[in-house]
Length: 411
Image (cartoon, rainbow, N blue to C red; front, side, top):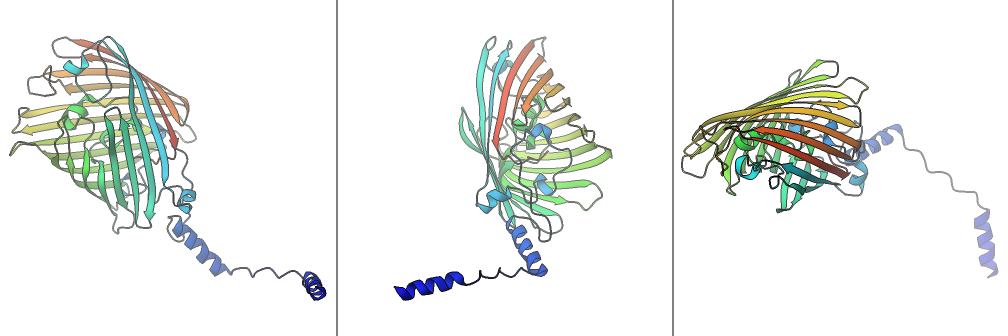
């Protein structure tokens, strides 16, 4: 016992151990590169900044995405990456509608509507998003949609990050690279519903499906990106797969300080169920966004036109339509918009568009309140004018919120 006490006192009397040697500058740089690589950044570059919590897509910047396909080069929350967790988000949409027109019979569409002359509450959708970098070579994006009709994988795809010569490949289930609005989730839209022309000429509830999308970022002084995609889609209300080929050229130009002009051309060929039948759709889109430096106010002018040719079906022939809208964001809390539409009317009681079904005209106005970047309340009114002198009034009050980190969609 005596010797144990002597040994303990001797150890306590020894000076404190010397501090560990500091790493050299070369070792420090190598360590920083390894950490940056682990966080998904390029060696020698800065690590990705923490992704902010999901912000309403209406405030998305006008500049094109940093990589082909409109996808971030790395993305994800670096702190979540350390914990091996993806970014998780949820977006909820609820609405109340009133129509004095029998929309289901006279103007069928994929958007929200209820019985005529009744105020109808709606639960539209809850979107669950899971997004993360898989490894230094690819990232994954998964969006699951919960609606009154059931649960569906809205999108689930893998995107390459390191292909040479400006190429990028996306594989899985995704929204087809056609036009502007078709590539965006509804919670990204300024207006509550889709334009009638897109709904009737391209696809009801968006053109999408499993397949492969190859994008090429052209080495030009401005942003120019070419897409070629092959998918299996369901472009109509009939649940039947169609082989689809889509091509798109998208360009962005700086036209002044704080002003961006986007121009796109799209084309799609969709196989119809009948032997030898097909649907060919062409589209052109334009977007001009002006946002003064150091201001949260901006103006966006956007329009799309669609032209369709059907062969070998009861809708044989050509049809066209489009929309033009202007949205003014007045600071961080309010936004206002107007939209005008021309679309082929349907044969009453059906969803068919024929050469003699006439033209439906529609004008909408929007007022939006954003208490924060994580929720918004929209009031939208519209006036429909159908062939034969039939008119209809519509009113929609729409609430949307987001929780969690939700990455930007293509815009």
